[in-house]
Length: 493
Image 1: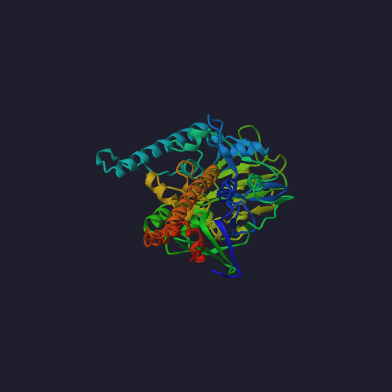
Image 2 (image 1 turned 90 degrees about the vertical axis):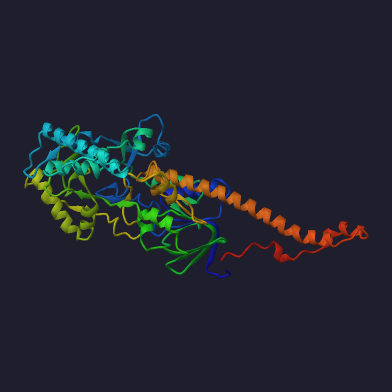
């Protein structure tokens, strides 16, 4: 296609989150310089996003480096150390002993511990039954564990399953990298790690990326692919051609109708994509004129026990990370996240203040500011991170990350071991680009073989017509001018 509006590259990467940037970096390090990154928003980072709030930098999306202190080093933790990123150790283990009821009383530690043990035992029993059901072993099936009923049971169930404080199955992140977690508390933001990666292959000046290979505010709406190449169309009507494309978008975007792929993805691919759930995880930040909550040791996290599961349940003060900031953050998930996204922020502040006054009394001050991220309603994200059913098998992950022709896929949802984590996204970007480099080498080898065969065929036909009475003809073969079209590459589309 010869159109002045068409930009050409070897590889197009859709999405400038950590997986997209990591993929681009590996490609650049291996000599693929004409990579084009198309980012729908006005910034890099994806679900890593900072915001100035109450005089400090808070992380609206990914906020922790999870998996630190083990035998192996978490690669994102290594990046943070190299960049001297300021972090703050988070210890969730005491949160379940800071549970407030609706009258402001702290639940006795013995009751909290019993409720926690009951929730863990129930989760283990449920897991065993699901495994038995999957194996069709009726003899292993027992009565379903009782659902949590009391406010305390509901709160602990939320912590156990939705906030990921504890897990029934061993989590690869903690097994391989360690069980400690560190909150990013750096004024440069978590996204600083992406800028440090980008500066090795993109031109950056005074903190801004000034490189034509990164294009912001480019919303990809259509992707056409064939055996010869890909053609990407953005919402503003621009066209981009490449030999390959890497889709570094969230599982929520893949499940949505934002990007039309032609021809459509095969059934095995769409089934793998649709089998995954996406969790919406909302951190609501509240700024106060002064602090009124406990800030002593083991008091960073506290819990509100309500008769509605997940209703302003999990709280954290930011004094350890940002002393004197007077900021609280409450985490909501899934249906509660979607509910507050659909209402005015003032209504969310009113609900949060009612909960806080139940815990700390009627005389506490009103919040003076609030931030309510909207990850679910953001068409470029459609949620926070992937969440696979317990019994998803290895083949499913093979399918979800497998390329379809010249279309490659990356992101935390393609990581079998570390899906849902920043390091999962980072490592998936590296793995995808390595797989693409292998394919590019194979493709180059195939083209070389085809070209040699194509050149040889007319020569063989010509030599076959020569007779022994024409000995000089063979020595003059180099004088023949072969058609120029023989050396032109195949047109893209």
